[in-house]
Amino acid sequence: MRHPIPTPLSMLLFSLLLLCFFSAYSSEQLFGIVTKVADGDTVTLNAEGTIHKIRLSEIDAPERNQPYGLTTRAVLSSLLLGKQVEVKIVKNSDRYGRVIGRIFIDEEDVSAYMIEMGHAMVYRRYIMDDSLLKLEKSAKKNNLGLWKLAEEDRVPPWVWRKQKRKKDLRAK
Image: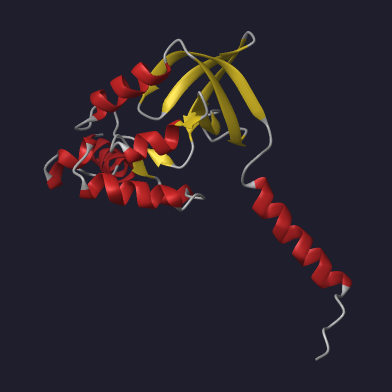
């Protein structure tokens, strides 16, 4: 059986595909102390005197005004506030100027922990790590965290924000 000889175009396309795959997770890292927790998926990090807002990658936690929002913020605060962490940068900046990254404390992945314990949902729009879906399914099955709420109170945060924006526009 003959194998085709790769053409320059096919080699270029393959190289671009590899680049896209590996650039999804940057090799860049930040190390610092969490000085503030805004909500269940956003913290402020002091990395050697430089302040960074960090948005946890691939998860979405209930907003502060949403059912379970204050609880998820309290959980993230107890995990991270005042602690030394490592941030593996996924994206240097989102539209709000935040760094998107996976935060690790003592080598534990905080995004995975928040999903596993039911304190956040997998942000399907940005998911790159399918193992988070299994953790979410388990948390839901075991009725952990926000999955204990009545179904009408378990509105995904991305849906809740969209509904709030529409309501705010109608109020104007």
